[in-house]
Length: 254
Image (cartoon, rainbow, N blue to C red; front, side):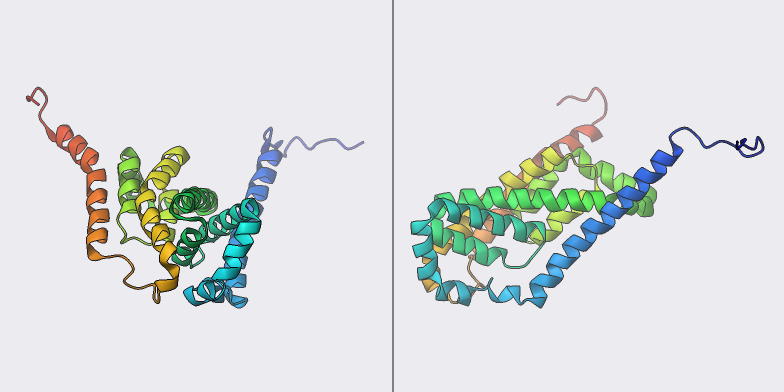
């Protein structure tokens, strides 16, 4: 019969379970990171960008229309999965997919499909990035990161709406950056859903003239881009008002 050595301290209750859970969490994080990296590498290794370009879509537009006419529900499901997957894995070709969706489904159904699919894909990559990287990034940034996080999270909806509306910031970057803050998932999803509607409608609507589009550059006029920027500035008005009120001396008239 083995007698425990009294000189050796007993392990704390639950210590082994906590260690096992920590190890399992690390393995899951590594697995998810490898999954995302593997999909991106496979996309380029298999020349996936060859299928997500304007020339390929135009060459197959009759086949796309015929398939959609015969299998409308299946076409919607396939388009949704492709778009959500492209956003979730940060693959290039979002503009071509938006134009194609507009060409195949029209402006209204196409806009609804792209907005929902892009929001779902953005939430997936947001959650994955938060789970895999956020804790380590916050520890490395320290006090500075905490101050940035607090300022951004306080006005998260307005800031996210601004980033979504102004067509200057890459879509994949806006998907990832908020994951390193404490922004609630609901706020992130709602701001994404609302903020991408104007731009999505413009590009999906342009897709109805796919046959006359020869290049992806210069599709949107400077006036339209300016309108998006103005909408983005309006999204920051609540932030400006709150900051102005916070700086007013106590008891000062409104």
